[in-house]
Image 1 (cartoon, rainbow, N blue to C red):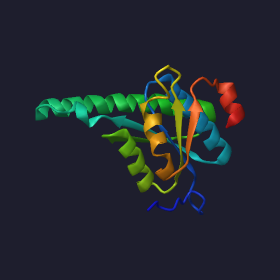
Image 2: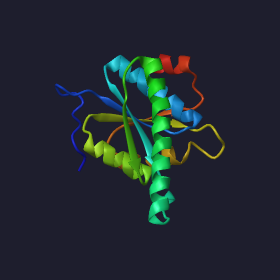
Image 3: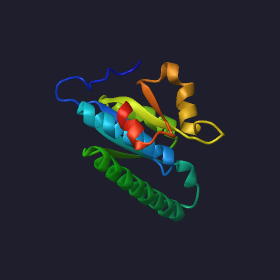
Image 4: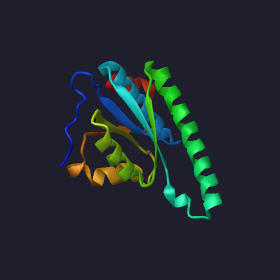
Length: 163
């Protein structure tokens, strides 16, 4: 059963969830979500994932690798947060999750009833829209919230006109 979204209730704000990485298309999703949040008095939630498959080593090495991955995720989120602020003059929320990204997205949506829209951007390469977009699209019929997929080739002006 899907939890009821609370973003329209008093004391709540609609949240736009964006999965952040260092790809050019991630920036397109950030810009779109920031513009939509600014225009609807919403909030952008930036999610960065850490793949827990990277930590299959001895305990000491595992702790060092996890700390390095967390530091890298924090740096990625700091850059994305600055992008949100520069585009829409709004303060984003940031989240780091470890594990399978599709599962982390659903878990975050289930734990935060204000998240109302997932914003992803499609890659522009010949292999398709990207693994995350493909994974989410395959579950579209049962996904708990609407998903907006921003074409990766849109410039800031085009996104501004659409958002």
